[in-house]
Image (cartoon, rainbow, N blue to C red; front, side, top):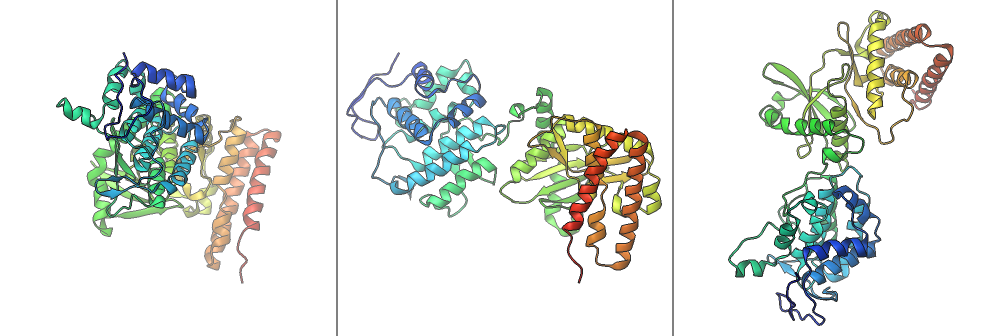
Length: 477
């Protein structure tokens, strides 16, 4: 049953064309009938919103705001700059540019991003733009709910009634309400600055330390159960990896206390790796730098770790934190290939290469790719090879067989870069000897275990890789 009409909003703005206020059933029908938002899951509804034009999303927000307050016309405030908590919001003339930036960010959000986080970002945009004479909070709460599981729950009607209720109405009945959408700004943040607000909203979608409170709490950036291609048990594993981080917090804290406690064991383009001990066992902690793409990098590693949990020959992720940019893995014994002697490289047994090949094939079938840089593979003469840097493929290969896997191994075994970039002539000669010893070992393995046609395909990839690296090497003076 619809609520009765009223001639003005709670803040006294005149409603010229009043109607009964929106009900829970009418809200669902309006979204489906007028905007095509009728998906059976939050993820499907996110995709449907992405398919709307920017103007279509704006019209949807206006319609929700108007009908929630019992008006048939827009309650957009084109002139005023509202003050919240004693601070000014964005001036009307700058709203369009911020809204454009917000919509572009939402449309570009990865498909496996948590739908609740996408919806909360859109809702937070309403709060920070504050474009309506009244009901900005109600509009944000109702829009945000579309992308939460609560929209599909048996309690949908009750959720709707709580979220659509105004703050003043709650006070009148002596009740309380769920949290609205509240940004958690850093100190001295200027919420009237369009660039600052756009940066904050972008941070909500890339995890760059932007925090907030919402009616249903702060949604994690990635919901592992909705990740593309992951089976449900992999989602459970990813959740477990995140939950396990708490058990490592004390040991990780020592990394920040003093450089004496931080044993740096490696570094890459996006991260540094330290060694810690817990309960008599050693672990490697990957610290991903404060870059814009940090969360994407973390998710790629964590999801790949969930898919390959328990696979031999791959580094095993034990815990992780998106908020702190940390991945904790079981420590891998072994040495980098460029640290082995020519004798050790020449005597690598077939069984170890067989195991590496099998591990690569299995991982690649799960949509995992490898960073084919020699330092990203370790070798132990007893245990064999272990890959320590792998992640999800953005475009998984449809063809996964031993030829394709062997091509990646050939790349990982290519020591050309170490040979060319070493300035010390004696070390350069040593690296050159190691490079040739390892190349000969790989070549011998392929000749013994691959057909002539397979051998040609792998060999072609290896020769091309070497030629490309040599062509790009710096010229010595």
